[in-house]
Image 1 (cartoon, rainbow, N blue to C red):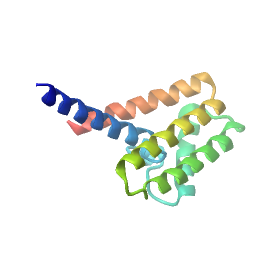
Image 2 (image 1 turned 90 degrees about the vertical axis):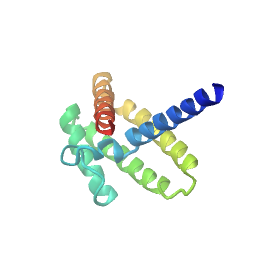
Image 3 (image 1 turned 45 degrees about the vertical axis):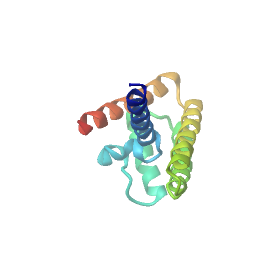
Image 4 (image 1 turned 180 degrees about the vertical axis):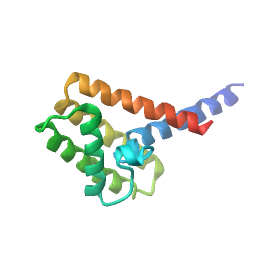
Amino acid sequence: MKTHFHQISCKSQLIVSFVILFLFSGSAIYAQQHSNMGGGKGTPEERAKRQTETMKEKLNLTAVQEPKVSAIILKYIKKNDETRKIADEAVQRKTMQDNNTQKDAELKGVLTADQFKSYLKYVEEMKNRRRGMQH
């Protein structure tokens, strides 16, 4: 029985890891909503611009916040594009998670507490939509 439960646990952990990877990767956060969130097509600069526009709309970014958020988004789109080239999937997944943790920390430093809550809420909504699509 332990082996069976261990296998389920490992499978569950793997599924959770993939969901986290998908949700928190720079361009993947928004890939589900191409028209709203910028999607994954185009150059890093084009994707960052689309994502910034969406965040500007959804979070009511100020004129001071917008270029800072844009720079953060572009930085992590480029990092995640490079990370996707890593052949070892476990290393790629861990690096992607680290990148996204760093990105969230940087965004938290630019956004107000309410904006950051809204950002996290939107990420959770996307996560729930993806779960619904998987079943």
